[in-house]
Length: 214
Image (cartoon, rainbow, N blue to C red; front, side, top):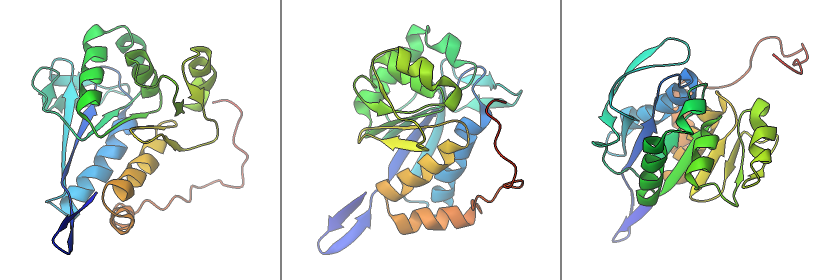
């Protein structure tokens, strides 16, 4: 976001809260973490990033990575951007009143609330996706549609509904995070970040058809 100081344009500092929980999918949050912390490295005055877990402390992720959260739900400060990743752990967290209450409170204070992959199911259960276009991991699109509260978008890496931004599975969170850098600050900064992390997708085996299932 750009503010004005007289005739001078000034980029405004934003804070980003990344929610983590047991069995969260690593790349769902580490990809966006890399993008937002790279903003901080390039422009230290522009971005603060922190992680939030239900009880703080250590979180064991879906593939075994262990992460120490910066805050618990009780100690976390408000953030301008809230990011909710997905993973196998969402199956338990959609039934966790503390998680849903935190999402509602964080969303109420935030400028933008986002999800990666099946994190969309946590936003849906918290009530912040009602009536919105949204996406999720390709395997879970029909499950999200069946809930009847969301207008499901297929074939889109991310869906920007203003205050709510969702992304497709896993690596799509990187694309969404870059989109948000351009939206919150400046497209030129987003391109600097993209080059800094060398995110220029050109995967091997492009000539081999993608499987219908994995």
